[in-house]
Image 1 (cartoon, rainbow, N blue to C red):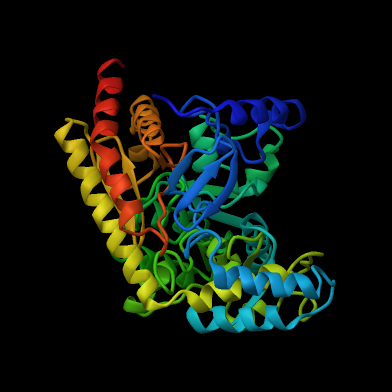
Image 2: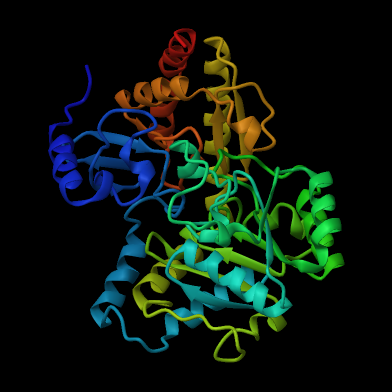
Length: 438
C-alpha cells in the first residue's frame, strides 16, 4: 500500500502558490518521475523522515554533502558552538583559515577563496581564468553542469536534461558565443577545437568525473590529456570538483587520477562536502593564478557571506572526521548496492549500465558503457520513473531524475543497505514492465 502523503501534498499546494513550481531547485519537483515531492521534516544518519512520518533510506545525501550522514553529533556540536558565538561578521575568522588549510592539505591547490555556492565558484574561476590569460573563449563538455552560469548553460546536464531544456530563456546568445561545447571523452574533438581556437581559449572546464548526466567517468588518461593540452596552448585547465571533491575519494577525483598520473589542474572548484551541508563552496589553484584575484590582483570577486563562520565550521568538522575508514565503509556499501542493482536489473531483463567514480555511482537504464551525454540520453525515462517509485514505496529515496548520481554516507549501516537490497528486485521488475509498455 502506498505511503500516506497528505502532509506533503498540502505543503506542495501551498508552495506552488508562493514559489515557482513549488520548489527552490527544479529537480526536487518530481517532474521527471511524476507524483508528489516528499517534504522532509527531519533526517538522522542514513534516514529521511517526511511530514507524514514516512521513513526512507537516503541515497541522495543532500546531493552529496552528507558524507557522514545526517545530523552527525560531532558536526552538530561544532555548529552549535559556532552559532552561539554569532552567525555572520563580515570580517575574517579563524574557521575560514583552518578550512582553507585543510583543503590545501588535501587538494591540488596552493590557495583557495571561499564563496557561497558551486555556481559562484565556477563563475569566479572562469572570470579569473579570463583575467589571467587575457583571453575570452571557454571550452566545456556537453552534459557537464557547472551551475547556472550564463556561458556554461550551453548543453548542460542535470536539471536541463531532466526537463528536456536544450538551453534556457534569459541567456542571450552573446553569453554563449564564446563557449565551445564538445562531446565528453572525445580527444579528437578537443584537439580540433584547440587547433582552431587555441590562441583564444582562456580555459577548459570539466567536471572531474561527470555526475550531472549520471556518473560518466573519464576514460583512463583523459583528464591528463586535457591538462597537457591546455598547458601546451597557454590555456588554464579548470577541474570542477564541486560534486566529486572529498566525495569520490579523500582527495576527490584528482586523488584517483591526477595524483597517480602526476599532473595538477590550474584551478579547481569545490562545494558540497566541504560545506558539511551548509551553503559553502570555494575555488582555488596555482599561487600565481590566485594572486591575480582582488585584493591582491585586479580580478574582482566578493561576497558578503563568503567564508561564513558557521558554514566553514561545519565543513572543517566534516573534513576532519572524513578519515580513510569513512571512505572504506562508503566504498564497500556502494559496491554491495551496485552489484545488487546490476543483478536485479539483469534478472528482470532490463538493459542497464552501473557506473561509478570513486564512492559515487548511478544506474542507466540503457546498454552501456555510457561515455558521453549522447549515450546517457538513451536511458529510459519511463523505466526510471517506475523504478524510482517502486523504490520509494519500499522506503528508499533515490534521486528523482535519471541523470543524477547516487550517494551513500558512513551512516549507511547494514540495516540501511539491506533495505535497499530488498527493494531492488521489485523495482527492477517495475522498470521492465514500464519499458515494455513504451
